Image 1: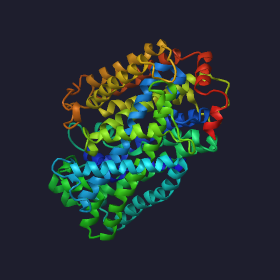
Image 2: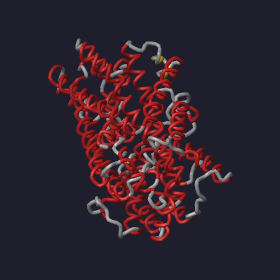
Image 3: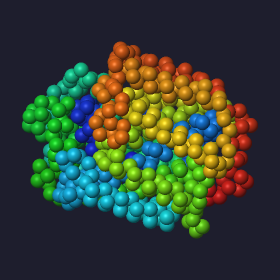
Image 4: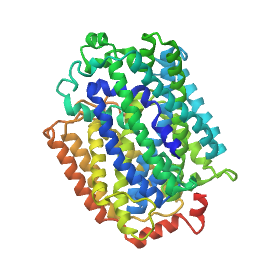
Length: 546
């Protein structure tokens, strides 16, 4: 379980995120990782309690359903599935783009358009299909494959950090052009923007992957908190080290030529393959070889685990009745949800066509992730009141304070991501609601879903209210970034009407109001117990846990 989450945390993020964050915030990007890690730790504590209370497959898509009913479960379940299903193609793209930059996969990635070529898309599809074969064998084989990859994935970044610290450190870079990136969007604004849109959240996401495999854990009360909190801790320490090393490894002459950190994106070679380029400039051919190999193995390991867990999420959505019941079908021997795996792989392949580059797809994935995280503290607070009796092997400390704080912090990350990214996710939500409506209209779901209209009282104002704050706020001034597939140019930028710093207080105040409203509109205990009983007839929960 620990390695399943850790290998998801250490994916293509370590290869690119330090460069992206430094281009936004300069040396102060180091603070972005600490801020992001602290916020995600609050959410990880929520996951730890819920996962031990309900150690089920596809857990994060089910908790909102238990707490608030069908509408909340369906919407947050979509965010959860979307972020997980998009990671496998993201990692495949990352591996092929790095290989193309290194010369090993020349022709697979077009350096002029910064996206996969036709041949590259074919190879990416082949990689995703190879993961299907491993997944169909069963989770035990996935774990065996993943354990070896995880040791490698931890070792290589540590090796790069130690070598560059010893051979190519320029501590003066920490103060060059100012610790905080200059300009109108510098200082704290840049640090926070890097958390939401600079790859920090994307780099650290994945700690919850053990929760999705909770139904296959041998000892959930011990395994799941250890895996969730341990993997996040490993990720924060490792990524902070990587950020420090990247900042002090960039040649001072490069910074002087570019004119500062905010122009770092002008170095095309460094942007394509940051650590490979630095290793090659230093003449460390052996280290460049190791980085090339890791550019395949690290993204590959993360893609494997995400394809596994996203299929469990889809299985959970089918069990809840949001998508056709056929997605629940499992193999007789390994009990693997093979239909869900096939559909998830197809979704991943479709992602390659409108979003054939790493940066394009990361925006969608990151936004879905942070909204998925926002539902967790709400579910915890509601279920604490609706189900006060069940024994909780792990209890979140001081939940009356930490749960609303976690919800407010999650919404801050949503806000920092910017207006354009938020509106993109809302467009995907419209598509999901259409699929859900078709499932209900034609009776394709496992069960009929009750209206649970109490959730509408807080959920609709929450989604609409966050959109209004995003539009009036200070993040995402420009129009939606070019290259978001069919959504390019749909949204205009935020207008910056809210004063800086006041906007953060507005987000926190709005979050606390929604938190109180949501908890007050939770499902009653009898309904929650009925939902749990419906989803798990006698003996079935024990079967999944075994």
